[in-house]
Amino acid sequence: MLAFYHPDQQLHDPQQFMRTGRIAAPQDLPARTQALLGALLARGIAPRMPDDCGADPLLAVHTADYLAFLDTAYARWQELPGAGIEVLPNAFPYWSGRPDRDARPACRSTSVIAQAGWYMGDLAVPLGPHTWRSTLRSAQTAVAAADAVLAGNRVAYALCRPSGHHARPDRASGFCYVNNSAVAAARLRTKHAKVAVLDVDTHHGDGTQEAFYRRADVLTVSIHTDPTSYYPFFTGYADETGSSAGVGHNLNLPLPPGSGSEAFLAALDGALSLIRAFAPGALVVALGFDAHRQDPLGVLGLATDDFAAIAGRIAALGLPTALVQEGGYAVDVIGDCLGAVIDGFRAET
Image (tube, rainbow, N blue to C red; front, side, top):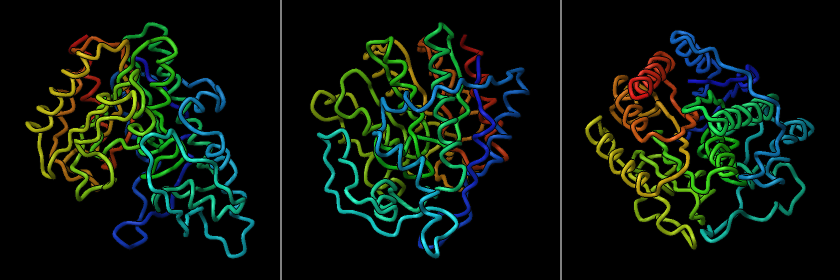
């Protein structure tokens, strides 16, 4: 298994996020990368540095005005009188939601305060001095893994931080700024007529769903905690199946809080059956570890060994696969979870 990682991804060091009405201590800590790197090295995998391919591959998923905001917002924010330590919005526009549209128009206001409300969907995505650099490197890491798969490697792992699956084409949310999994899928589409994305993070992959919701060439499947009472709340329901040409190409499999391995693996079997029927040329796995029972933000009940079983069943598909790291905030166990995934893939290949 090849793996990719850029040390600039550790520079992003958020200081705050809003949780149940309180500014809380951040959970997406730089220490997460050290735990994951340790798991790779323990299994003899030395991650490679991704090439600096610029931001062009991101434009296959994200709008240019949104990426420009991510690049410039922090410097502009610091020019405001009395500005806080990070960019956080305090004004949000009304937007009705249009499943038939790829993205909203650019923000009409030139104010960074207005643009923060337009391009940032919640208070969990503070923009600090190094956020854009880390975000760009994270996305380039996903591109590198996709390119390795395109070059003929059976499986490649992208150690991405910040994560990406909540990032919509024109909006950051849920610790995510650029949708690494969607960028990897778009990269794989340059060769393969059909690509599937399987999201096993405990949160619904709402950004990935939106990116491909109107398309028949990318199948998106997400297994996650029921959003009725869990983030991202507004998407991830079973009746969301796609729009326009994409009808029938989005599957959500929400699980009740407290669900363990039996329920998760049953949902996974259903997801894999649909992927087999879709017959993609390649697969992206949005790989979250926050379904682990020890995760501070999770409410599912998976054990470390369950991730080996998940990986083994995915590997049995026999598809060229890019594994893109998403969530997982129990630093003491995420390395073991990644190790279980590697072991699960090795057992099937």
